[in-house]
Length: 220
Figure 1 (cartoon, rainbow, N blue to C red):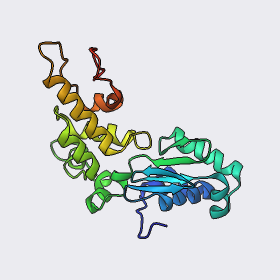
Figure 2 (figure 1 turned 90 degrees about the horizontal axis):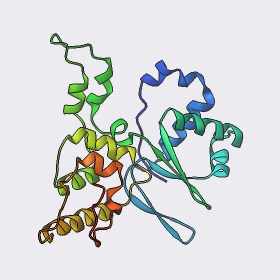
Figure 3 (figure 1 turned 30 degrees about the horizontal axis):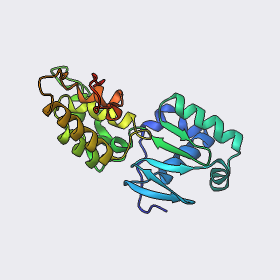
Figure 4 (figure 1 turned 45 degrees about the horizontal axis):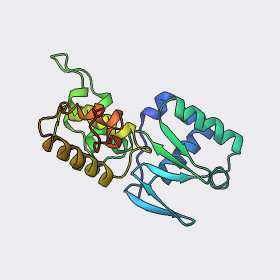
């Protein structure tokens, strides 16, 4: 079981979630269950790689730990998926729940707590600019971004990175794919090689799966 604490955002009051006791109980349960660091969980004889903001989920276990009915849990999960607060990936033995934007909402940056409450500046600049300046990126993303040749629009790339939480492969897989694609370009011997795309596009298209062993145009 993870130790420590999690943050609760005050804007949950404005959204009215706390009035729905079942929703609030289950959402808090998800926050408490999610891992704060990357690690491999052992489920039976299978090793499952978890990223920050993810946890192994089972309906029966959630029922025991929350006191909610399975029907209520299913309904709440459907709601949280629709409002894009979490994603869930299901196998034949278990599921993995991923909390969207976990690195942003659970960062150690105390300034993030007040960003949405500040008014516009005299020049009309929205506080989003300050949020961008104070974004704390996860270590894994920074390693990916540093290795990727076409480093543009870090904020957008980070949003794409977080959106893939739960479906994104381990960091070493991504880094290996980048190195393979670099070598494919370097050893072109006059053959056509497309320019590296925006890192956001590379992530959204799952371009780490592109086969560069054949003479074809990859999707990045």
